[in-house]
Length: 260
Image 1 (cartoon, one colour):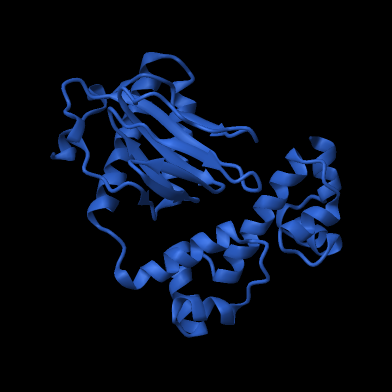
Image 2 (cartoon, rainbow, N blue to C red; image 1 turned 60 degrees about the vertical axis):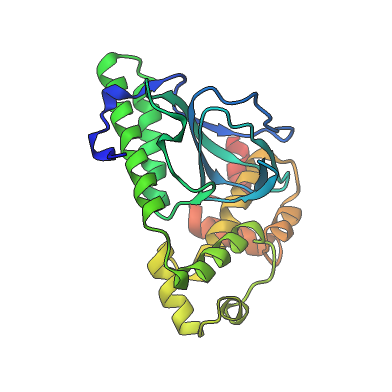
C-alpha cells in the first residue's frame, strides 16, 4: 500500500489514544481483536504469546494488532508496563493491509512518544478540529512504523539493540563497560561511540538513567525503604541513590515521596 495517500480523514478511532500504566495484577487476554490497534511499550518488561510463540516485551516494542489477533500478555511485576494503545479502523481495508513485523522494535522512540502524548492531549479536548489533528498525528505514527519496518536495523546494530534491552530489563546488575563491550564484541571506544549514535547516550549514562527511572517509579508507587529501592535498582546504598537522584531530578527522594 502507498501510505503517502493515507489521510487523517480515513482513520476512524474506536477509542481515545491512551497511555496506560498497568496495575500489578494486570494481564491481557482479549477476545479476537475486531479492528486495528496501536500497541507500544514505553516502559517495563513482560511477554506476549501469539500464535504459539512467546515474545519478550521491553521499551520500544511495538505491535500493530489486526483483526482476528488473540494475543495473551503479562508483565514482570518488578518492572510493570506502561503502554500506548489506540483502536482504529480504515473502512474497507483488508486484514493484510499492514505488513509489519511482530514485534517491531522501534528506534525513534522520542518522536513516537512525543507524538503519541500530543495525540492523546488533542483528542481529549473533544472538539472536531483538535480531534482531526490527533488523527493526523496518528497517521504520522503509522508512517514512522512503516518506514522503520521497511528499513530494518543494520546487522551491525543488532548487538547494540540486544544490549539496550538487557540494560533495561537487568538494570540491577553490576554492569561495567568491559562486560558490555564483550556482550557486543566491540572495543570500549567503539561501543561508546556507536551506542551514543544509536540511543543518544553512552551505555553507562543509559544504564544510570534507567536505574533512576525505576527508582522514581518505586519511590512513588511502593512503600519500600530507601535502602531496599537502592539495592533493587543497582545503587550501592541509599546515600548513593539519594545523591544521584538529587543531582538528576533536583529533588531529594524523601521530598518526592512527600509530594506523593
